[in-house]
Structures are given as structure tokens and as C-alpha cells.
Length: 402
Figure (tube, rainbow, N blue to C red):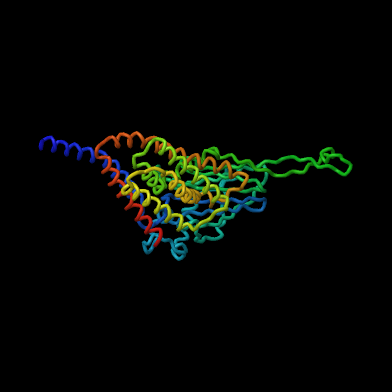
């Protein structure tokens, strides 16, 4: 009996190791990408570009997160505090100009335009610090093709960098997300001939006169809908707190119907607040949103440890999902997408998020089903949940204090 008991214990220990290793690797992955100096929910490099064109001038406002500037320019962070000060910007203005010259370019009919640097200043967008650079280029005319190219992190295959671009020309707008291999945006300015009538009802065209109004047509290298779909995918893949929340929800044994209810309620909830937030109808302080997201991770993980039966988890998932939706909205809200284009952008962004979430669920469920058949599944859930609580608590403290 003792021999069999020993073999039993060794078998159980082996099973624990077999299931704990993936959990440990997952936690280590999060720990590696999680930076202790920032309490932000999403570890991505981001920039915003706003282009305003008219016949007299073209204005470009390029804003990039300061952590990216610190990464790209050695020694700019003099005091090594990972915070870019205005004094540090002033001292390294020449290097920043060189970085911009190499990183971004505006072309007119395939000819690169030379900008005039007007000013640089530090701005805050959704609890992140950005460096905004104001550039002025020559004006544009109908018949010309305008292109903008972003080369930041172009040689880094592991980058999650994204540039959210919005352009306006005589009331015509274009939005896209430049990321991955698709870094060029193009707008063709054309002429539309419109007839005018005289008082006698005769058209001006009959007098061989025409009134010309410029119109703009966007021709990005990748379709706009797909760029927002990819943006949604990237946003959830780099949203490690959202992924950890999803893992905590699925970690306890439940029926397929309960799992389906959890995923559906989370989808509906975050879709509601994502839309309302981007429309500007619901706004909450970023610090509160990020702290609540961290708290939601802790709460669900603690439930996994102490609650004997999990029954109506979809209700708490829906409530916390409303807060997670506000976190998802951060990128699009800063982009200020015109209302006429907002519906398509929102739908595709949300579809990108859902594609990743559904893929994760489909991959995890067979593994979890197999795990729950093992005798040591309870210990795996308990220890895994403890690790999740610790990570969530770290995020919570950082987002409340720092």
C-alpha cells in the first residue's frame, strides 16, 4: 500500500508540474512585458497623426508616446526616471528633429516635402504622456496625390507600434491605423464638376463656364476596415490585464452553457461602453477605469479560490465588462473619428477584439476540460488563481498610487 501510495503521490506531483508549467510560463510572459515603472494597462507604442490640408498650407500634428522617444533616442532621459521632461526635450531638440526626419515623411506627387517645425510640447492623452510635434508643409491643390509614411520601428519585427491617422481636406476626411507592414496612407485630391443655373434656368455650363470644387479620396495601402480590425486584435493582445481577467473567468470548472454566458455577457458589456465612450457620452477618469480593471482581476481570482460553487458568473462579468469597455475605448477616443465614419470603425475594431477573445476561449476550453478530469485540478485552479491575485494586486496598487 505504501508503494502504491508513493507512486500515486508521484503521479499527482507529475500532473501538477505538467499543468503548472503552462501557467508559470504564462505568468512569466506577463511579467516580462509588464514594466514596473508604468501603471498603464496596455504596453504598446502609439502615435497620433492629424493632417489638415488646404490650398495655403498643410498642417501636421504628430504625437508619439514619450516612452517610445526614450527608447529611440539614447541618453535623452537624463535622470533615468522614464519620464520625459520639457527641459530634456529642449536639450535634445536636434536629435528629435533627426528622429522625425527619418521616421515620418509627407509626399506630394511622390516628392518628399520639407516641413517647418513650429513647436514641440508635452501633452497628456488618457493618462499617457505624449510629445506633440507641430509641422507646417506647403499647401495642396486638386489633382495632387498626398502620401504620409511612418517608418518608426520599421525594422523591429516584434513591435506593436501603431499610428492612428486622421486627415481632413475641405470637409473630406480619412482615418486609418498604420501598423505592421502597412505604413503608408494616400489621399488623391480630385476635381468634381458641378453645374450652376442662371436666373433664366440656363446652366452656366451652356456658357462654357464651370464651378470646380475639390474633393478628396483616400487610397490607403490597406483597407480602412481591415486596419481597424487589426487594431482591435492588437489592442486585446497587448492588453495583458484583459487577457488575465478572461483567464480568471474560465479557470473554474463550469458547464459549456455557463462559459458561453460569460463570453457573451463580456462581449455585450464592453461593446456598450466602448461605443458610448468613443461617442463621448460616457467618460470616467482613466485612473479609476484602470484601477477597477485590476480590481476585477483580483475579485474573480479570489472567487475561484474561496467560492464553492460558480453559478451566475455572467452577471459579475457583465458589470466588470462595462469597465473593461472603457479601457478598450482609449485609442479610438483620442483619434476623434468623424461620426459619419465612426460606426464602421467601431464595428471592425470590436470584431478584432472578439476574434482574439474567441480564439483564446476555443484554445483554452479543451485544455481546461482535460485538466478538470485530473484529480489535482483543484490545486491547479487554487495556485493559478493565487498567482493571478498577486498580479492583479500589483497593478491595482500601482494604478492607485503612481
